[in-house]
Each structure stands twice: as structure tokens, then as C-alpha cells.
Image 1 (cartoon, one colour):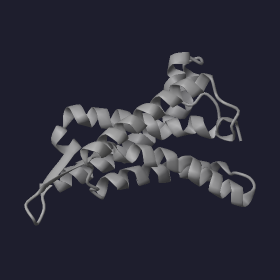
Image 2 (cartoon, rainbow, N blue to C red):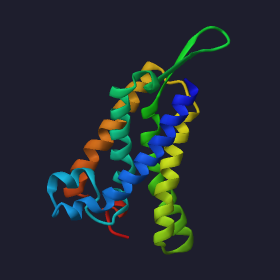
Image 3 (cartoon, one colour):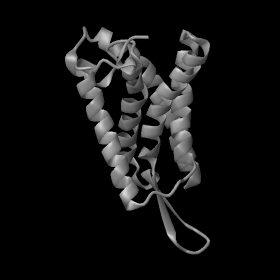
Image 4 (cartoon, rainbow, N blue to C red):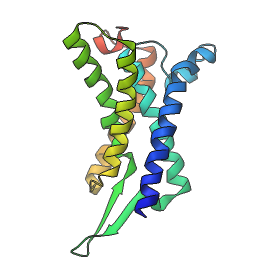
Length: 174
């Protein structure tokens, strides 16, 4: 079971990294299709770049949810004979939030930003998101509900704020 879990995470890192990288260009390739813009960056703002991780990882979780349910809910016996379950969606929100944290931290320190660091931040965030899944942090039912609500709110926020961004720095092109 653990080998299939590790294999799923490695495949996930590769899948999300490739799809996220391609997502950066899909909106332009689609001729600025508004529906495509809900799921891919429409400009160079930090908010839009958070979509590079969020939607590909959500998509990957959905694919593995339906294709391999036993990998999705890793369950095993502990020493005291209780069963613990873990959710692979647990890395989506922290991984997505890590993007602006790292971007604003390093660009605030340097006073400018560099494209190669921005790209590295995406890959670091993807690896971080999948590492959270590998650490098998137990999730209780109320935590699953909170996680679901956060994912839902973030997804709705991406769709809404793509075309109606507030006048905040994260929504502006740096």
C-alpha cells in the first residue's frame, strides 16, 4: 500500500507540474476564452498564478479519487489497533497559499522579483503540497468539512475574482 501511495504522489507531482506549467499558456492559446480563464491565469498577478497549482492538483485528486479509491483514502492499523484515514486533498490549500507567501516574502526582501525564482516557487509549492499528503496527517470529519469548504471557497474565489478583482495587491500585476 505504501509503495502505491508514494508512486501516486510522484506521479501527482509530475502531473501537476506539467499541467500547471501548460496552464500558464492555455488562456492565451484558447483565444482568451472566458470559461478557460476561470481555471487558468488570465494575467500575471499572483492571485492568477495560484491557479497553476490549485486546479491541476484538484483535477489530479479527482482523477485518482475515481480511479483508485484505496489510494485516495490511505487507511492502516496503528499500534493500538485503531484505523486512521488520510485525505490526499489536504495539500491543495496549503500548497496554493504557499505561492503568495513565498513570492511576497522574497520579493519584499529583495525589492524586486525574478522570473526564475517565481517559477521555482511554483515547483516548490507543488512538492510541498504533495509532501503534506505523504506525512499521513490524520483528518477528522470536522476537518474534512473545513477542508472541503476551503477548497470550495478558493475555487469560487478564483472564478469570481478572475473577472472582478478587488483593488488589492495580490490581484495586481507585480
